[in-house]
Length: 619
Ligand code: AMP
Ligand code: MG
Image 1 (spheres, helix red, strand yellow):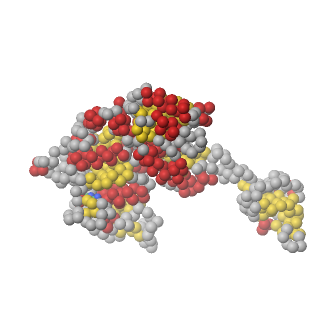
Image 2 (cartoon, protein in one colour):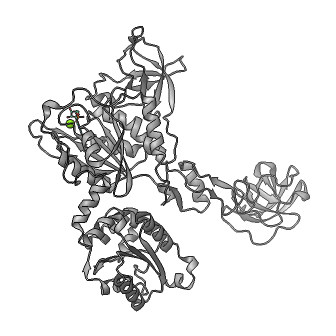
Image 3 (cartoon, helix red, strand yellow):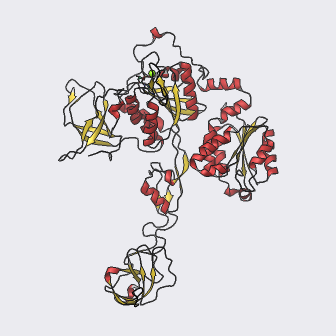
């Protein structure tokens, strides 16, 4: 389908860009996004003024040239020159109102200004036309909203339903239609009784995750600095102005000339922080200044108030007339010269730096409102299981449980700085899984699903991924507890590589595996260090070891007289028992049991992954 998109036109509608095409930022950006999505299509770009007739003429021209898609940028606002929506309405035969609605809904999450966009979308003959706003940032955000539906929409407009099916099939390596699975579940007695997947050691599994995820193509997005905590800076940022921008006093005192030495000065004026000095200082004069005030021209030092004596004042005591400098000041004494804190051009942040509140404050002080950061992959969360029902349902049906994994994983990812898309619950049938996985892959880059990867006859995810999606299973078993059947796969879907973590359904396994695999993978794709920080901790109580290396959930306590914290394992470590994960600060890396070491005595020093907040209850 992607290859069949023959032509795309990008029309920048802007009086300003029409006069000076170097000002067009949104058009080239939109062109790049379109080229990325439809690499084989012919791309046409033009810049036209905000003239309804010209816009109509160009839209008709491109539609009549049998292009599949025309994207406009600009002219959708409320200014009287903004007429792109009117021109679009005049040429389309059928409106597609839900596309602008979807764009508006998403954009409103970012800015209330989205209410002021009047974008239109519709079809003329066999061409889809979509209006985008005129800013580069808005174009990137809005394109992201429509990206996943564009190929499908174009196929539907071209009445290529049969082809959509064939193309889906071919994209999935010759396997069946995405709505119908080719996995046969009828012969339950013949299912394998042993997993065919080799058991990988953790180190090998991590290596695979890191190397596969580092293939994620680096993209950047521009976000308001306030939303930037934890994000990775995509382009180095420089100081556009010096800080301070004027010579500033470091003390409350008197600005004067150092060459006047010690002695009496006439007090000329008072300058508070924020007051702009008017006249230059003359020899023998001083100006009362507060910390942060700008020095008047001529002043080259500040004498702090503690080093002065009042000589004379007006009778009402409201005005100082003369003060004596008790100590001879030196040039630049208690003055922050221009650029003292940050010289102009200083690198404020390097590409790859992680934004924290101090850096964000620095950027705010330097006049930055937005920042380019590494885009995160889109993550979809899907639960699988016939027994699951929505947590919000009031009554539990017989033999059912509420789905806890999706809510847990959504909040766990958010805690670590990643948003996710909720893709609901899929039933354990091959067809239902194919439909749910297809939908999730359409919406996201990384799919995290839970359940259905063990050895039961209803554990169908692995065969579905293999047979129906032509996925490469990088691993399907890991020597770890909890989380043995953890599966990591990639597949091509609608022309893009998708990354799939299929985690066991037991809530504790899902929790631990999300931390040790999914968060790690997202960090690698965001350009951050993959590894969790490790701490040396002392085991508070003796612990029995499992045959497999175990990630025991533990909280930390400070112990008087010991420089290592004590690690308290959080109760029964059964993998269904989410209570054993509540309050987790660290995951203890317990080695597998050996004949000589079946258990670890209290006091054993261990390595622990810092996955929770240490500032909470670490006492
Ligand atoms: P599975 O991995 O599908 O074999 O499921 C293992 C166990 O985890 C079963 O007891 C399931 O009922 C439970 N389980 C699976 N998915 C969820 C979920 N989303 N929320 C809570 N428990 C689940
Ligand atoms: Mg299940």
